[in-house]
Image (cartoon, helix red, strand yellow):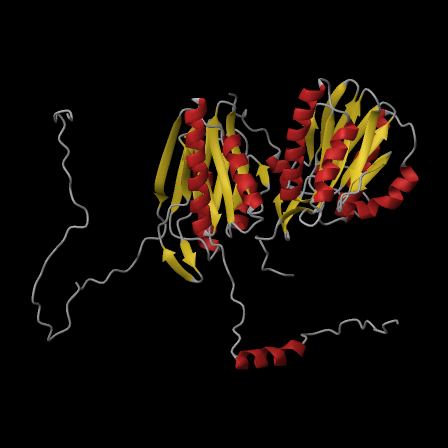
Length: 235
Length: 273
C-alpha cells in the first residue's frame, strides 16, 4: 500500500450520483464521499446542490470544477429568472451547464446530472457527462460508482413509478454502489422535486440494508459515539 | 497492423529492472527527486458559542526547520480568522489580499464581514490559478448568520463541516477529532480538544512541531491565544557564556538595544498651519 498519501492531489469526488424521473417529478440521489488521493477529505459532503427553487444538480468529478460551474450557473439562472419574470425551466438550467462544460471541455473535469420540475414539462432529468454532451433521459447515473449500476438499472427501472418506489430505488442503488466502489461511501442523500416543492432526505450509512457478505456491526464505536450530547448552538 | 503484445502476469518479489537505469542516471549527475512536505497541522471546530481555530508553529524549508515559532492563524476580519497550510508565501499573500478586499467591502457596505464573502473571494482566486497557488486553508468566523467553518483546497473546492483539519498532520489531528468531537462542546472542552489534535500532529508528523496557537471566535468577541501550549521547550542550555577565542584583542565594545523605547506624551498642542 502506498503510504505516501498524496494530500496535494486535487480534491475529487469518486462518486455515485443518480437522477430518476417518476410520475409527478424527479428524485436525485448521491453518496457523500470526497477524496484527495487515498484520504477521505469529507465523509459527509452534499453533492446535490441547488441551482434554483425547482432545479438541483448532482455533481461528480473534480470538486473544484463542479462547485465553480454550479456557482456560475446559479448566478446566470438567477439573472435569467429576473429577466424572464417566472421560474426557469429545467431545460434552460441544463443548457447553461452544458454550454459551460462544452466550451471549456479542455479545462474542466466534471460530470453533472441536472434534475427538476417545471410547469411546462413536469419532472425532467438531463445528463451532462465529461465533454459536455446534453442528453435528456428518464433516468441518469454518473460518477465512478455508476459502473456497478448499469445492469441493475436495466433490470430494476420501470416507467411510471410512484414517489416512494422511485426514492427506494435510488437509495438501494446508491447503497449497492457504495458496497462495491471504494471511492463512494458515507451517507445517502436524496432530493425529491415535484409540483409541491422540494424534500431533502438523509439515510445514514449504518442504517442501509446489508448486501452479500456484509456483516452486522459488532462492538461498533458508533454505539459510543451515538450517546446523547448537549444541544448545539442557537443564534 | 496489429500489435502482438503478450501481457505476462507480474512475477512475485522486487522488480530490479530500473536499478541499472537509476545507477546510470546518478553517474550522469541527475539527482533523485526529493520529498516536498507541506508541513503543518491546522484545525478548526465549531463549539457551543462559536468557532475555535488551532495551528502548530513550525515552518520548514525542505527538511530544515526555518522558523520554530511562526504564526499560521491569519487575520481576515475582526470576526474572521484563517489558518493556512502549504506554501507559506502563498498562504500569506492570499490571506492578506482577501483581508484587504474584505476591509474595502466593509467600507462600501458599512456592515460586518461575512464568512461566506471571504470564502467566495478565496475560492475564486484559487480556482483561477488552477491549484498553482498552493494554499490549503481552514477559514472560521462568526457573523450575523451564525458560526461558520470551511476548508478550502488549493484547487478551489470548499467543504463546510463542524470540525476540520488540513496539512500534513491532518490525519493525526482528524483521528483525535473523530474519536472525541461531539456537538455543543463548551469553551474549555473545545480548546482542550483543539490542543490535543494539534499536539497529535506535532508529535506524530515530521512536518509539524513546536507550539500550539489557538484562536477563539464568538459573537462580537475574539481571543487570540498565541503559544497557548509550549510542549517543546529547549531542554539543554550551555552554562558557559560566549567567550572570544584566546589571543583575540577586543578593540571596542558597543551595545545597541534592538528595541528602542519611545515615550509618547499626551497633551501636545494640536498641529497648526
